[in-house]
Length: 444
Ligand SMILES: [Zn+2]
Image (cartoon, rainbow, N blue to C red; front, top):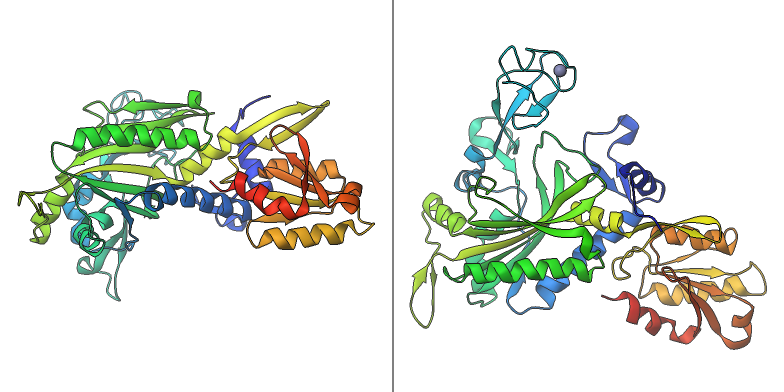
């Protein structure tokens, strides 16, 4: 058994099997923008559904929200993104490459003759660092002037903060409570890359948990553990996961405490979820900039305070990449290489492949009837093309946990062979028990 060694292998599998395509590929592609294909959208939807169920459906203290991508431009002044969301950048005048000023490959002092470009190797061609805002700017209405300027949101969290009391009152919540949101956000990253790991357009699953000041550290500890457990419950190998605590100089301007959950990708340990204690920074700033009170009033004690926020922020694309990388296995089965995605059955794009062993003796008709039955409940796939071994392999690569084969014995006793993707064990299951069999194993 072997893990994924190179990202190129995964990028090529993802394209071939329809998980992820490069955006605008026929035009040469668009930098670090990716499209999800048929299997990719199913996997992505299953991952976001699983997160939503655990955050919203299974709890009484968290409600959902979907705020718009476009927001009042003052939001981004209040949040600090207009002034603080800048990266100092360095350009090479020779090769036109652009680097973060903190890029460890830069030698010498950019702007001075001794500085050397890490790409073309020229000396003295690097500009002094200059500020660059990571937000995508756009204009509302027909006139493109400063008054019409707004931004594509760089995070979903602010849409939650400005709605906190709308949600609280509508859902009759009391502190502590949370608001969960899944949505697109945009950052004009300077060094995107590593496939879908860092992209300029991305999707977030964020939950903002509003607590009484003083209870924030306890809730931070709670969510830190809960989020790590969630990834392990998804089947991600524990030895590939770790925490990374932000030291004071890494902390964002709004954060009191922050920990990343990192995964060991083929390109190294990288963050894919963050747990942040954002204190009362955001709500205080919105109170200041909007002129509206953002205080919570405790019904019993009449105490007034601006709630503290503990945030869990997970990148959908990054989680999908973690799921794919962790699931990828190459195995030797009877002298042949088998590529298999051992995805958790609850998030696998297709739950079962349905195969007639041969295209005769009424087997295709029975298999199609089973397919039609199961299709009402699960995403399943009918395949009668090629040898049964090849059909199994195709589903292994797609991460399909079960293969159901209609064979000679089916004609006698109305059972099918059920093959387990991971153990390769086979068992007989009665055709009228298949819905229950799958429901028990793929609903998570
Ligand atoms: Zn250069």
